[in-house]
Image (cartoon, rainbow, N blue to C red; front, side, top):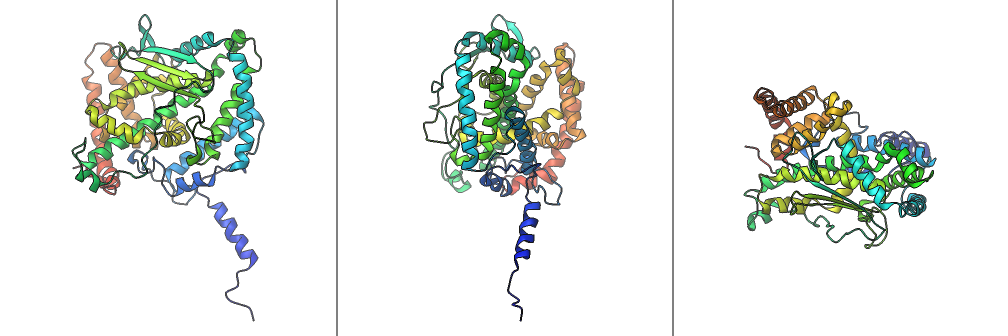
Length: 455
């Protein structure tokens, strides 16, 4: 007599096949990120999981089943392709197997790069600044002072320095506290914010800004491709360009193969004293402020310069906060473990953000400055408005695109010295529609689940 409780081998295999087919992330080949990363995405426990800007409905067929998984799928596919193109490696193991494949690629390419770059540091530093000025649409407002011509009052100096491994300052990298602040703790102590809800809303704004700041600056890792001829003429090396590709693509893949708990300031698994590859600092005490970028290689230097520029404009996003409030928000959001997730998902978020930009400011070199002008205006929006608009933009709605166009129109009219009220009035009207609808149906419901009221 057949045992009714018996589970056949074929049934087990069929269930496994079903589960594999319904994995939340989508993959084009056999490569997979570390399981803990997939689990964090599926369980919605990443630093971006509770951000209302990314509260986007995804097709309910289950593949993927949340917006972060969709972003992760897009980004991971791009990382896999770039690695294959640069190295020929078609499959990277998961866990320690993947780490053992990637670390030698990074180490060997870095040593080769260092031998070449060490002979041409000052020239490469100068080239890095020149390239970033061109690509970011910056103007020289005064000798040695740069900015975007739409916002001449926001000017800065640029400093770029290539150093050896182990010579990048890392003493202020912080980790997120083990326990998130709770409302009962908030009420029991004197706090910078009047309400716990206000703190959470400002944190959500800062978290989204950090994600697009990292996403936008990540392209700096690959901007060396724009000056291939100049690099060859400057260094005399035919291999430097290829070595850059190996190092940066393998490093990108490492972020997906190593659990966040093992990632260190330099992006490498190992001990707590692992060296840092680069950093940026915005010194607001100088006049004008100075963006200082330090890195161990040219591609990382480009990344840090762009990140510093975005960080400079983002500094004004907290102008409405007291210094104590701003410090509290940054203490909770500007941490290493959250930055790692920004590096994973930020590029995909930024791609969607740029996809809503007016096409002419992406294609016309004369209008390139408007990309940073738009960024500077966007990050200055109040938290509720920014999160509402960000949600429309990442969804790619026509209303989101139209609203960004109106904001650009307002910037252009203001630059002409003409009355920008008509364009800005259209922008404000559109934002009221977005904010009201999002508040009632999405933002209000979403934030109320976090204990946040928008009334």
